[in-house]
Length: 505
Image 1 (cartoon, rainbow, N blue to C red):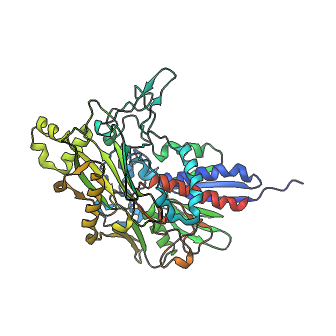
Image 2 (image 1 turned 135 degrees about the horizontal axis):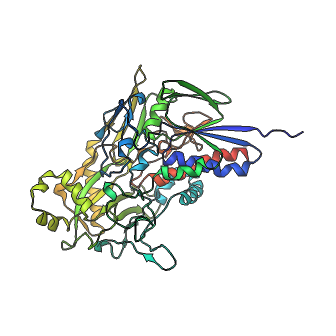
Image 3 (image 1 turned 180 degrees about the vertical axis):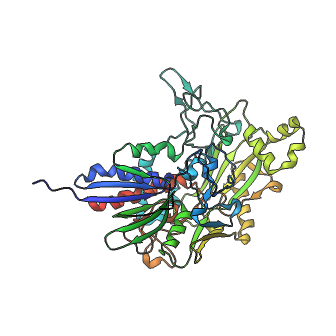
């Protein structure tokens, strides 16, 4: 008599990049543990592009003001989310299908060796996560992209990036390299791929900038995944042998499901709010941030930072500064560098409205010689975001900017830019509000229980002594460095999924 395979019931909460990486990793592992039957439910609110609701409040676009056709959904939160945010732009999370990946701009850069050193023994497992995520994401650096055997299209870059530059001083390396972006392959026409039309910052006309929603069909078509949209996750209750997920659907109907494992990828703010509602916290939730400073710059003797033809208007370059010796304590520095473009012209005029009254020809003559560096700092030089819950179940989000660290952060940013020939125009620098750069997390940082004096998670992403609840978004990264967060968070999400499923081998 044939014995039925035991069933593993899994829930993945969220639809952003971390939830996607987790779900696809779980699907990858299913064939390896064929002696089990694995059922995966994806549960998310998942507002779609054209959906509107009378109880939805608008949100701002973020520090780089990148736009997309999905912004209406990506920066809105329904009243049902019970979130009151006092951050700049009322940042509180995303109710969109794909979350903030719809507007994050496709920046791809993994944490450096210095940054990954904070993972301890789990750091070695991150390599498999990076390898897996590289299969999901398109990647465009400075190399030629082949359209066919006969045709090749090269990426257009501003002159100040030719050639790329790197220097090493006193045990520290500095590099200025073409940005690595998650966008479609280069092509002559938009029907084939990215034709470098230059409209990235106002929304790609052909949706060629990657977002998590592009890759979810890989999971849904696997035959192992059920999708439950239009549900708000109210609470999680972990018992000895299973986890209860309680949600509310669009018709206010309460739904109760039971799972062997629940992977939470709602983003640090909404994951923190869920942990508060579920009472899986120690008092409150503190989210660490990466400070953002916008600094205009000039190059050499007022060389142009533009190019003679249109180009990708997402960041042209990455400036990365890191310690060559991993054990050193000086943190990483990172900047997304934008040369002049028509799209950037519009953004500068938005920040400095008086420029609109300068004759167009004169304004562009000046601005073509100016670029903008979007500088990110380590969590130790940045503010923090605090989440608390009241008796009615509303989560309030506030920030602590750590104003005493601003001058030191500005000095570090200006010095790092100067190391590679970018001279800051100090008069027009702008400090961005805490959280407004969207690189935050580490509210349940990976560490040993003996080292934890606040909220923490173990190597499986389990927060505060939980066994079957696993956080897979930026909440669990051990340290928020200056580097872009998404690629590393996705790799860590895959690492956690692989490590949990390995228990069933």
